[in-house]
Image (cartoon, rainbow, N blue to C red; front, side, top):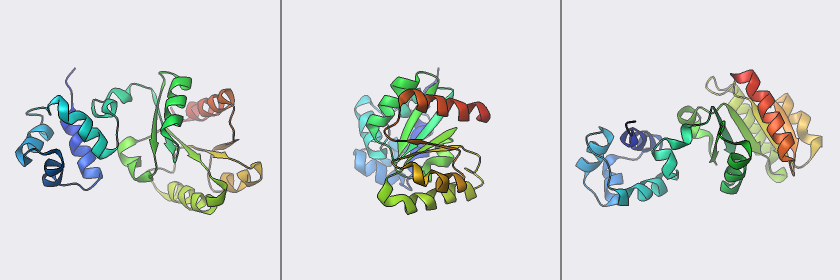
Length: 187
């Protein structure tokens, strides 16, 4: 298996609008080193791998494409890293869970499902995010499950295009069942 870390670095650099020069400066290497990595003519030394992952806010597994093993990719929007670990452990190897605080990653990540962890005080902000997702050609067909504190607002999210909801604190078995039900419709 050929490692494609250079392609990942280039993808992340483009995603974040970072020049080769800036990345080289941050890492303390030459621009030519970055260029060689991205063209797959060489690989970064092991000491740079964690620095690159930290700089782009991704895991080392992501850089080596190990996180792509699951059949389904779930984007946990505004979730916590602890949620990712819990969901990954609970859902097993059929799922890859990624956590993001921005939806700018939709094109790169191409999730099969999005979980939105709604905080009551910011619900209008989430209405806007869900509306944006459902109006975008790139994401309109991705099912969204909202996790809410109050069942009374569920219908508002469903009317905006959410596929399902679950009331927090969520029962792991119920969450898995709802995720599975939505993904059966996806693939």
